[in-house]
Image 1 (tube, rainbow, N blue to C red):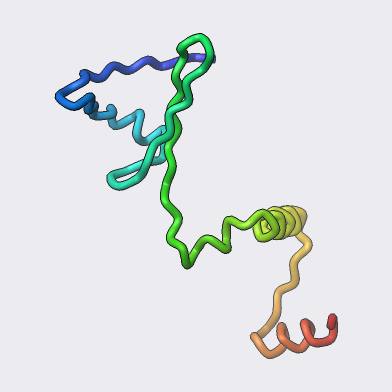
Image 2 (image 1 turned 45 degrees about the vertical axis):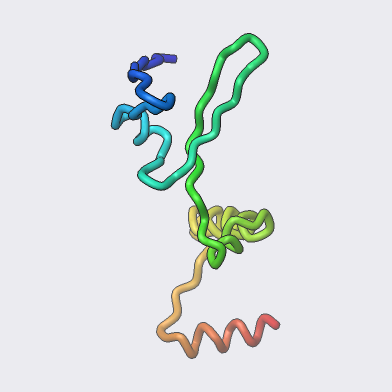
Length: 97
């Protein structure tokens, strides 16, 4: 694995500015949080934590995500149906009930 190393200077109050490629790799921006994990031998890892608005938390539920993965697999396998209009789609959904 090719490891890129970056440096930052610690400023007053232990503040640092992350290099742009580091924040991009962490998928974080202003207002996001980071989490530090300190290993038993002193190694420190950092990961980005993006806040999820409360009204969108349902999307990240384990059951919902399982359904998302199933739908993605069905789409990738070509198991889809194209309807001429919304009424035809709802008619088939009613029939499946």
